[in-house]
Length: 169
View (cartoon, rainbow, N blue to C red):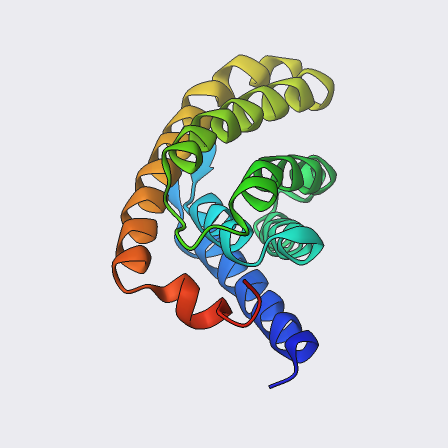
C-alpha cells in the first residue's frame, strides 16, 4: 500500500480515536472532566511521529473541546496537545518500541505542560478557575500516563509498531 495513503488513513483514524476517547470517555471532576485521550496522543506520536501525529493530536482534542461545551479552550488545547506530542514524536519514531524509559519520563514532562498550560490559560480566561482546575489536570495527566504505559507495553509485547510501520523504519 502507498505510504502516503497509509499515513493519511492512520492519522484520520487516530484523530477520530483521540476525539472519541476525549469526548465520550469522560470522568467528571469539580473543574470539568478527566479523559484519556492524551494517552493515545503519546501512542500516535511514538508510532507515526512528525507533523501527522501533531495534526491528529490537535484535531481530535480540539473537536472534543468544541463538542463538549468547552470551545473557549480549543485554541489553548491545540497548542498544548501539539506541545505534549512533540517529545514523543521527535525521540521515539525510529525506535522499534513505544515504551522506553525516555517515553515513560516524557509522560511527566507532558503532564507538566498540560497542567501549566491550562493554568496559564485559565489566568486569562477565568482567574478564579485557574487554581481550581489544577487537581483535575493532575488526575488526567497521571491517568493518561498509566494508560499509556499499559497500552504501550501491550503493543510492544505484540510488536505492533514493527508490524504496522516496518516499511517506514
